[in-house]
Length: 242
Image 1 (cartoon, one colour):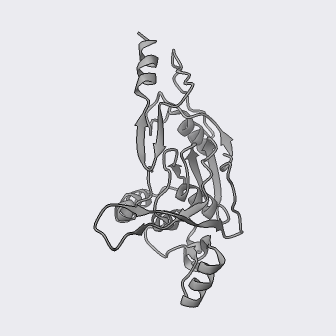
Image 2: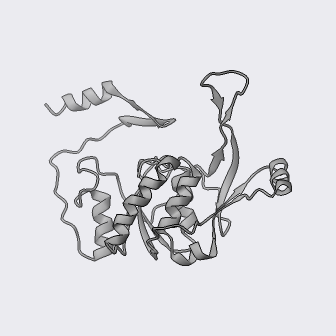
């Protein structure tokens, strides 16, 4: 799952309805390349995955913590600063979930992980997450018609038991490197293979590759949901295998 986009919530429900009708009782969620998005979309996915009791209780997923001025204003206006589970369908009613993580797992991805953690067993596999426990508002200039806006950081979030402030990211339950050779979704893909083994108790035989690319710097980086490719480095690495 690459991005939390609220306009895809209905499509997300359709996909999980199919899984729910299949009667699944274990789930592997891949957030390795998900650097965040809409909190409302995170709320929707959390409500699909969580135990049904949390939906019935309308329990807290995350709390938003603002400065004193905004906190006073929201309290005076009766505006909630909590994101709670929604009583929606489908709901998988899971007691445990496996989540694959990487350095680009950030913001809403991390909110989902810590938001579910007090209510179910959350097992993370992969790399340390990014460490972005803050949120922003988009503010547009209403006086002029152009595409410019500002997006200041205005709050940080915590889960229902007050966990927050993780600038170094979330440490995975089981650490492992990303597999750049096998396709996503392939049972032999490194981290997915570990998750399947943890679920079934049976090791997955992973095909060995003859060569491993060691990169001094990443071939790509994420910047405002855009990917910048390091073309010279990529060409150099590929030339070395001729």
